[in-house]
Amino acid sequence: MAEAEVRTREPQRTRPRFKKKKPKMVWCVVRRVLLVIVTAILAVLAALLGVIYVMEKGPSETARNLFVISCRETSAIKWVPNIFLSDETVNEIAAQNAIKETDDITDPDLVKIPTPEEVQDAAKSDPEIDPDGDGIDIVDFSGSTFKGKMMVIYDPSRVFVGISGKFGQSESGKTLPEIYSSYDNIVGAVNGGGFDDRPGHMTGGEPWGIVMSEGEVLWGTPMYYSWDTIGITWDNKLVVGKMTVQEAVDMGVRDAVKFGPILIVNGEPVEALGDGSGLNPRTAIGQRADGAMLLLTIDGRQSNSIGASLADVRDVMLEFGAVNAANLDGGSSTSMIYNGEMINQNASLIGLRKMCTAILVRGQSTGEEVSQ
Image 1 (spheres, helix red, strand yellow):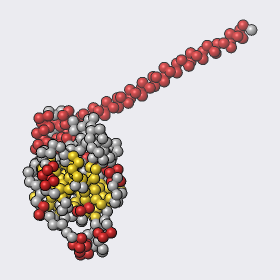
Image 2: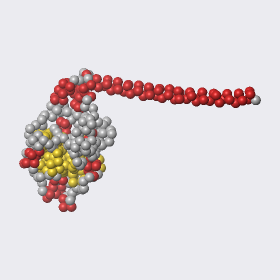
Image 3: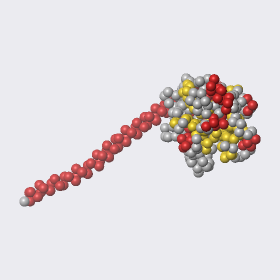
Image 4: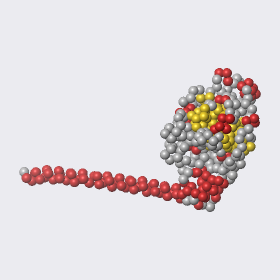
């Protein structure tokens, strides 16, 4: 009996010992997996640093400059050029590859706003003008490093600045589809002016500079400060230039945002230094001499569209006949909506950005529709 009891107990003693070894084996596997992951991450980081070093310290000055200014224009990685280059060098490269600032302000007399009858006559004379009769054309275009879309709005009175809501550091902006949906009878939209996107301030709720919407001044203190202003007057003319809030009001501006640089003033392209900027997604606004408003987006940071320089944007606007044009907020903000659908490829990897302002296009009223 004693021997039987001993035999039955022996397996009971060995089972706990076998179970105690399992956590050690699991932890060993976990450690190995973590080691592989950490090693892979370090290898990727080392490779990235190697690429950055070659771009910043390599033999090609052109590649270095393009890399530096492209990164500088990107809010998320604007610090990358300073990994191997000094602030002085980075600032010098940026200054040598930019659109020159201009003190010129739009002469509204250069733009003639057509009457509804003139718009109808133009549409009848050319079947390629507004073929579907909604007063808007979407035109695809491309360059060596980019592809984009131009929205042509024949009646500029339909274009205005839309807003996300209340402004301030504690407020949150809205994505472009959210701003689009918050207004009635809207058929088109692109992102608008700049906003505070510093670390800790990335809610998209605090705009830069001046904001005017449908005749109301919503932002722009101090009142005496001159902003790079992109405005639309009560006469439905695009005006661009440095001006204070009061100067904008005195010019009859009804809608305005702040961004830049200004690309074309009074039919004259603004000079570009060097490459004119880096290659990035772009948004811009312009107006032709016949009053048609131009809204541009260019895709970027994609295999089939790396992006465009500001000089590229200026040249595209000139090709479309713009007599005044300015750059709007771009990068991962760049978005275009037409008839409720996003028609460009947004570059953000983490979802659409929240913003303060947008350039919106109203739908036609019954009396505005163009007969074919």
